[in-house]
Image 1 (tube, rainbow, N blue to C red):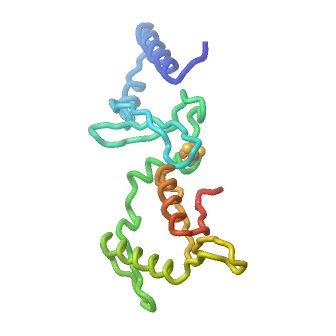
Image 2 (cartoon, rainbow, N blue to C red; image 1 turned 135 degrees about the vertical axis):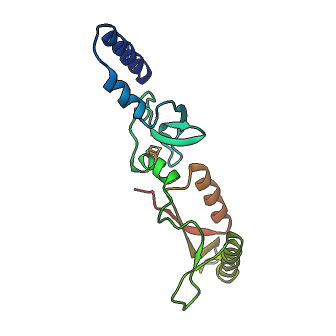
Image 3 (cartoon, helix red, strand yellow; image 1 turned 180 degrees about the horizontal axis):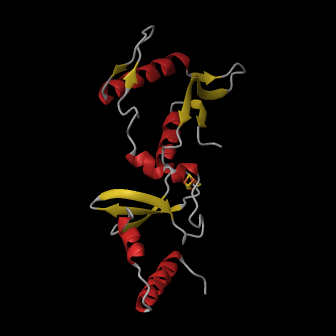
Length: 187
Ligand code: SF4
């Protein structure tokens, strides 16, 4: 019979009970266990969103808040392991210190950044994309062949976009005719 994480933990509890019955003092063990940040937390099985490997993750939620994430040792694909992106999932979700959380804009020839709201930023990006597409979209190449492409814009994806977001973005930028598309997570 193959041991799973859950059967291993059950075995540990049974072992601790046996030791306690045998007269061993387990106060230190109990004190350590109750100091764990996942003590009393609910385990929720989830999936790392960052690539198609789809490693399984155990998310620990306590009082409605995420307190920890770890690879699921019982899942055959990743067997508890996570790459750097999956391992950083908890930090990505919780760590905001020093992170830029609002759009920052530096006007042409300016020497400083200004904070902008999302409406202004999305509107600005949309206008610039349309302007570039209207100016540079090519229906045909030099040989007269139909190409319908836009070569003056480049799209760079982020590893912190989920598979689903990447799929939507890929379709959206290709619908504009963009052919220069890459992804920072392509390691
Ligand atoms: S990004 Fe890493 S941890 Fe996440 S699914 Fe892919 S291989 Fe697994």
